[in-house]
Image (cartoon, rainbow, N blue to C red):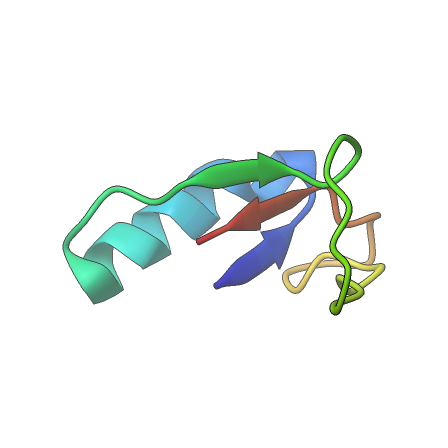
Length: 55
């Protein structure tokens, strides 16, 4: 699972495919809310706002 900004979506997809050898689902965190989980606020690759969840 990767939580990234718009600039790092391609990188996160590539890392996911390399690790799991399968295509990930891309979830837009602006339009999705979770009941039992708060996503990180910042991208795991930089300091920008986290926008996408790659799972």
